[in-house]
Length: 134
Image 1 (tube, one colour):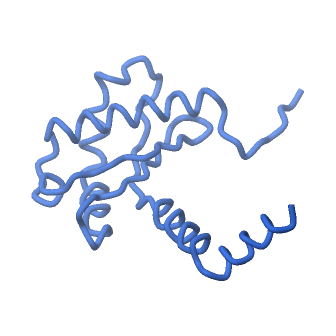
Image 2 (cartoon, rainbow, N blue to C red; image 1 turned 135 degrees about the vertical axis):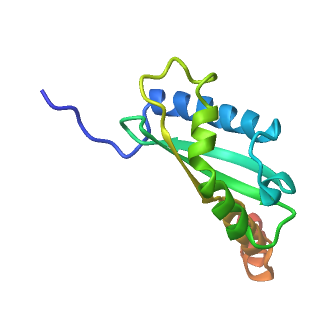
């Protein structure tokens, strides 16, 4: 019997992703990664998405107070193997330690664009017109 495939993550993927996110956050907060760029930057990890086999963890990060995010993302990816090794104590219940990949989180930029569109005069005029019909 085959399982139906779904693009939505399973509960297990979500749970493990949250555990990996917390573990990466602890490693970065403790300052275990010796890199001038990473140490000088406040890094927010908004989400970690796990592959279906739980062997790859993609961490979406937002460096705060930095205009060029790519420099911080490159530094994190350079130290990904070290960070993976430091995750061991927090994730010892896992059969395989996931490979960690860092990506820039652009969701906040998308939210900002949507907010600006909703506040634009054209959209607010249309929204105000809907209230008059009721």
